[in-house]
Image (tube, rainbow, N blue to C red; front, top):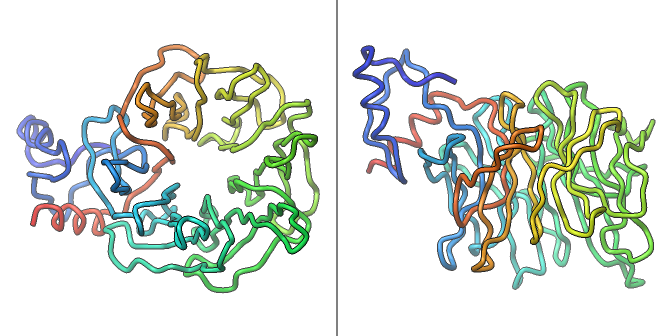
Length: 321
């Protein structure tokens, strides 16, 4: 997305004032807006908020504070008007999905079952449906991992009965990318699969004795970024959408997480723990070269493909006041 047009070179100078938490530039009705590439959770001491940032980490702006300063994993709707994320309640025993406008207004808690973890919301390509993971311990003490759907306004919540697992991600053709049940098992490895939205026609993409999870589809739907501990540490990998050419991108001594594609598909963002025990956001070329830190005290990265101009202008104006 190109910068706003004011008047040639003057605009480029003006756009540089959009650094930090507030914005000093005024928008106009016919202009486009600055290129926010990712949405993420930012940790400032005990306070947790959701921010937008460009790919370089130079321009960022806060959207909303997370309830009880716990939660995150935000996603932006295809229309660019809405976000979804989760917050934690009951001393973090209950995780609930929330929706809000991209300017931070109209926040609504749409799931609220006690002692249930609802997490990782993802919008369908048409923006009408949200998929999310649900985890809980049943009456027999067995950990359950389910995939649920609901309308984008939080109504008509329903479980996909044929699927067990988590971290659902919509593909461009409407199918679901997800990881299978097993994250809490010492005997069952978690694998990555694709299925129809009704749970039918499951296609398993990974097949080994280690955990493969948290898959994210590339913008052109040809590759998948995901996490695996197959080399003894949790690292970021990519593979073709048919499961071939599985390639390791990161080589760190500590765990990496939260893969997300750059909007052009050339890079993968991920989080990695720093020496203070807090996560920072990095990016790496999809071939595995040129790893670079983008943001500190930040995690839970997701890709931003579109932002509604009017909503974004309202957000900028609100942060100026």
